[in-house]
Every structure is written in C-alpha cells, then in structure tokens.
Amino acid sequence: MTLIKPQEKIALANRIGYDSIFQVVSDFYDAIKTHPTLAGPFGSVESWDEHKIKIAQFWFVVLGGKPAAAFHYDPVAKHFAAGFTAPLLEDWKTLFHGVLQSQLEAKLADEWFDRVELIGANLLRQNQRLVQQPPH
Ligand code: HEM
Image (tube, rainbow, N blue to C red; front, side, top):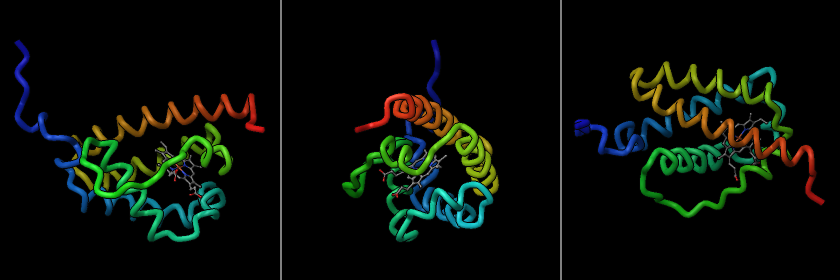
C-alpha cells in the first residue's frame, strides 16, 4: 500500500502560497525586461502590473489553487503572435528555473518546474501546428 503523506494532499499552489507565487512571477518579468532575447517579444505588454497579476493567477490555478479572479486566457494565439520559438522557450525556461531556485525551497521549485516543462512542451506543439497552418 502506498502511503500518501499529508502535505501531498495540499495543492502545490497552497503549499507555496499566493504571495510567493506572485513574488516569483514579479521577479521573473522584471528580469525579462532586460533579457537579451526575451525583452523584444515582451515589448507588447502594456501594463506590467496587470500582466504580473494575470500570470500569478494563472500559475495559482495551474498549481491547483482556487481561482480568485476570472481572467480570460488565449495563450496559443498570443504566443504565436509574439513569435514564440523553441529557442525562446529554452531561454524562458532557463530564466524561470533560476528565479524558482533562488526563491523557493528545492522540492517546491522542482514540482513547479515540472509543470513549466509540461506547459512549455504543449505550447510548443500547438505553436508548431499554427506555424504549419497559419490562421486566416
Ligand atoms: C512554459 C513557458 C511559458 C508559459 C507557461 C507562458 C505563459 C503565458 C501566459 C499564461 C500568458 C497569458 C496569455 C493570455 O493572456 O492569454 C503569456 C503571455 C505572454 N507570453 Fe508566455 N509563456 C511561456 C513562454 C513564453 C515564451 C518562450 C515567450 C516568447 C515569445 C512568451 C511570450 C509571451 C508574451 C509576449 C505574452 C504577452 C501577450 C500579451 O498579452 O500581449 N511566453 N504567457
């Protein structure tokens, strides 16, 4: 029989906590603004304050938390429009990984990064489909 440890019943979002999730997101986008390859594509962001809140909510829900606001997301179309590519995804993940490791204890950082890998691979697959068949 496999024993489930009590902490594993609590969603990762709640084990990390919204405030720490927001802090990771905030530091990440502050670093994006001066990043050699990522700053350009993110030039479309008009309000960093709003973007940070929207993305912190995205991660809170993806990591199993209850949504506190009803944001509308259309990530596949938005990333296609932003010029998403496999090399940019690698840069994005490297930067995100560094922020996670500097802010969170290793186990929480690893568990969050597992979700990054899954979503990143999924975005890449969907983006490649759009590249082959651009929307009319
Ligand atoms: C695992 C990797 C990534 C995740 C989880 C992620 C997640 C997200 C999410 C949830 C949004 C909000 C989408 C919406 O408002 O509908 C977003 C927006 C955005 N992402 Fe990513 N992203 C990733 C990688 C990248 C990469 C590699 C780029 C580089 C082109 C990128 C560029 C952008 C831009 C420019 C926006 C803002 C679009 C806008 O509102 O104008 N993202 N991302």
